[in-house]
Each structure stands twice: as C-alpha cells, then as structure tokens.
Image (cartoon, rainbow, N blue to C red; front, side, top):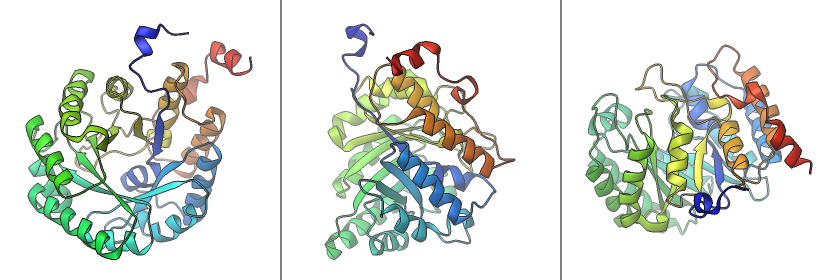
Length: 317
C-alpha cells in the first residue's frame, strides 16, 4: 500500500469523463461514420465509462465531424446510467441541447480575450451575457439540463500569452452569478505545470467551492498527468480525457491532444484510486479508435507497454 500521508488528501474515487467523441474528433480531419461513433460509445460504456461528451451542437458547416450529434446523443441516452454531455457555443446550440433533453451542456468561456474572439468571435463579457440568456431559457422551459462552464485557456494562450489568474477568478464568479451549475478549468494549449494548477485551483475553489467540478488538461508538453495529480491533491475528483490522447486546439498548431484516457486510468489504478473502469476493455477500445482514425496522430504510453507485472498479479490475487 501507499503511505497514508501521501494519499490521505486524494479522492478515493475519480470520474474520468471521455471527451474523444467531441474534443478529439473536432481536432482531426477524418469524419467518423455515425455507426462507428455508436460502437465507440457502446464499448466505452461496457468498459465502465459513465460520463461521455458525445458531440457539439455547432453548425455542421463549421464542424462536419460532429454534424450527427443529435443522433449520437439519442443513442447515448438509451444506455442506463450514462451521463451524456454536449458542448454548446451559444444560445442557438443550447436550444438544440434543451430540445434533445441533454443531461448536461458544456459552455466554453475563454479567459483569454484574444482566444475568445478567435474561437467564438465574441469577447468574454459577451459570452457571459450569452450564458445568462441560456440559463434563463433553460429555466423558462422548466428543463433539468445542467449547465457547466469550461474556462478555457485558464493557464495561458498561444495568441495572447499570459492569462491573469485574477481574470479567471473574475469570470468564474461572473458565471456563478449567472446561475450555472458547475465550472471547470481547462489548460487548452498545454501551458500549465503542477505549481500553476495548485495556485489557480486553490484560488478558484475559494470562489466556487464544490461547483468547481472538473479539470481538463492537455499533454502538449508532457505534464498532463502531473497536472491531474496536482488538482487531485486539492480534492478535484473529475477529469476529462480522450481515448488515444486525440484532440487539441485549433489555435495551438502541433499541440498533442488531451490526457489519454488509458494513461490516466493506469495512474489512478496504480495509486489505488477507484474509477469503475476496465483497463483491458479501454485498451481494446483504443486499438479500434486508432484503426478508425488511421493516419491521424494518436498519443499515450501505456498502450505500448501494457500493465506492469505487479499490477497484473494484484488484479488476479
């Protein structure tokens, strides 16, 4: 067992939210057929995943890779106990999510003014106002769809450079005042290190408390898992990840993708932290995804090496 002083501050169970079908696929040129997406969701579900971001309600001409989100969401909603989330960039997308009775919609809000203009063609203040309108529309419908705001470029931006932590805290407070259910912090371009993660999450926790629900880290500079661990030390117990480490950001050319689902799961299991995930099934799914996306860049390490002998022995003890 691990020394108790080391693990006593860590969550005993962590939720790994699969983002490959949205954050991953939007970053690759391949348009995956709907049937393969449904197979992906089914296999992920059988591997124990219970939170999957299945797509995004954006105009198909902008992201043809995600044009079938409505159909994919409808299938995901047939799987008992699966929390299927969708990303929505604006009120129009939110209306589609509400029409589809999505359990949760994720709204991006960039802490970088320059990134916000490049990504959504709106200032952060404009996006906050739109989030308020989305909250009002949800309430007017009597909908139970939850609203999570993901603060992107929270640790820096490839266009703007430094992002002031005080600006991140200000935006978190603004969306909480607008009535959102949860917030998450995203290292969209892979600039964060564990010290930065500890500092920013500590500051945001003072404002958001348990509404700070998730960490989203990219492995661009090889620090994705270290950054997850830094957030875990502060009690964060929900993290985004992508099968095969796909994904990235259109404003960070050459950046590798999100933390790989398999690598994150391996680290958690090795540390004795529960996830409810079946590692062998995750690796089998990774192989299928890599085959579907042949020619696209994939990332991750554990799939090459397999589990250590010691973990295999423990699993069969």
